[in-house]
Length: 221
Image 1: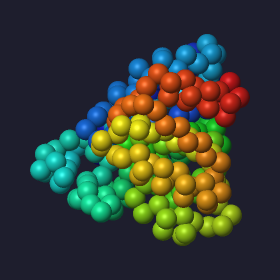
Image 2: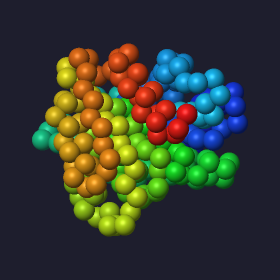
Image 3: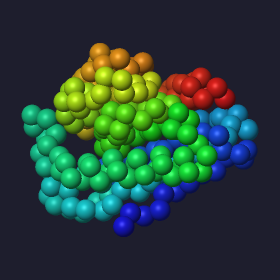
Image 4: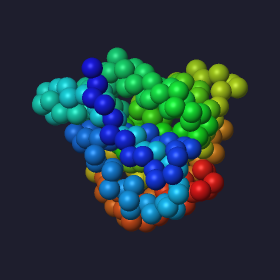
């Protein structure tokens, strides 16, 4: 049974939602400070939902248990993952979108966001589900088997806009992996933005400013 997500309600009635997934070894509070740093308008109406990944052994970390959306079995030549875990994570995110819809926020007012491993989950969810989402934020991330996912997606499926950001000095997930995902998504017809920064596997103030601009335009805040 997964833990309940951490939720930040807006001061005004919620009219949109950002579901934001943390990375490997982190927790649901990891990106909470970013909400305040975004400095959205006072009556922005954006609900932020931060789900928590289950704690399980991670093969590439010597089997040490830590919060993770899926086990990583190997690093080379590309990430080898536990597909059943990924399927569980995708189902969890789809459930969160459905929960927002039950609360009156339609998928076209929902943004999926994820950092690192969390980004891989939200990209997989967006492509696999075909939901008419407002958009996707893919931060310092990649997407396992994205090419085959895109090929199997229905031609008339929704193609939400995607904000991609990566650090040029990322020594955890090389920027080339993020750029490859961006290029595949762009070629598949998604409205993509690519941003790179002088940072490692992290977020930086300029990135937060760019996310703010993108969110404000996308949600007409």
